[in-house]
Length: 505
Image (cartoon, rainbow, N blue to C red; front, top):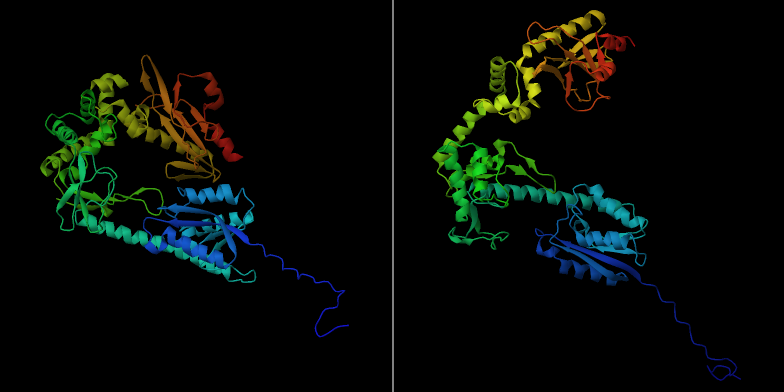
């Protein structure tokens, strides 16, 4: 019998079963702090906050990734982020979440779709990105994606606004005559100034000022570099040597340029035209913002501050160099160059590079090539009146046979079907022979370059036509010697039949 609350003797005591353990979630964490971020965004603070959230929400952090001093504008150079994406998110299946304090720590991508792309990549591989300041999203919350997208926009906008502020601050400092940053010009060194603008010491390469209110100016650099700069100006102004001669002289003496390489005419010209060697600070010549490619600013946006520091040469000496350069530039104007070429042709009856080299006044053949694509092309320009007359004659012939010819820019539109560029060529003397020079036009708007060889520069007679379709010829010059049968069989015509047939089709 039962007495009170006693159990019957045949009922065994059973242990109550413990509730099954709730499996804990697993995740990795990512932290990022850039050099310009405030202290509250430091990695240790992010780590503390994320770990606290993970503990409160039942998530075990199995690994942590961090990028110290890295910009969030792109994923480039963020070794921690890229390691997490490539070696953990894509290759491992033993965790569920990627924890990050907020969207700005994930990245300040200027293309906010790029930020979403990395999140989508995580989702594709079965991991969810959790921004702990926003909390764990509810599956039925339609506004959560809106919150995230708005935060992405805010993160990107913050970088834009900060970039503008930094740019304006740098311009203001440059206007005051102080060095903003970067490698100093050859022959200069960076001098640190204290808060009272008194010299402290010369900064070594990669060394930066330690206090925000300190400033940097330029001062004379290594003695050997200073001597080289002054030698360049002296030889250019007093000895009247050109840039190539000065470069050869420096290389012969074992002198080396800023990066340790040999001198060339371009480097010499760069020094001769750099007004900073006269003590004028120049800033904002180029722009590179938010990881975009560097682009050149127009001169009216440059910031120039005269007398910002002691120059390596006197301003008067620098101006003399600019006057010589300006005078020399006139020699290389297209009009003057063609006048020299015509003079030499009249004197010798033909042209070749050796004739130009022997003439003290004429630019070199390579200079003509740089200005006119080739010496042959420059030669055609000498007879531009003849070329113009022949082009007009061909256009007249076409108008007689074709219903509609429309002149547009430098080419013809035939019956609104295709375009033709008429390219007459005066024969170029070549020893006892001669050739005709053509350069097929590869612009996408030009369908056919119609080469027109003529008998000579005076009283020209059209000798035939060379139809060069853009799709069948390469971007290279053609020299037609005599009558190479293979080329004439493919492209040569005695009349304009090829153009007329296309117009009628």
